[in-house]
Amino acid sequence: MTRKLFLVAVLALIGLGAGSFVSNWAASAEKKKEKRTAAPYVHVVIFHVKKDAPDGAAEGLIADAHELLAKIPTVRSIRAGRPDEKSSGKFVKKDYQVALAITFDNYDGMKTYLDHEMHLEYVKRHVKNLDEDKLTVYDFVNQKK
Image (cartoon, rainbow, N blue to C red):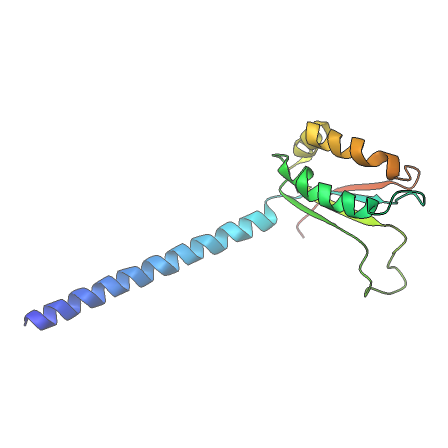
């Protein structure tokens, strides 16, 4: 009889643990989904580095984006990089050196970012190496269907 009670107790504990695991896993998955959809305001910048810019200017833009810009509190996600060598097609553009895509919760978050000291430092470090006539910015709100 004691053995049966012990076995029932162990099975109950295992059941509670499994239920807790599933519940935590579902909550974690929901949080990840919220993170993906929580920042609908997108700021895209296309950089053209001057022909006479020092070696490493493009890499500096990318590294500093992750080092400086990603630390600004209103930035929700950041992507920075060079054109993909494998991409091809009639509409694929590769005439730039670096693309930057940053997401925010809203316009006010982007405005805070633009005025933030780390963004101003980023601009100060890199503007001398950029062809400002070719600098392109796209701001849009990610819309649901």
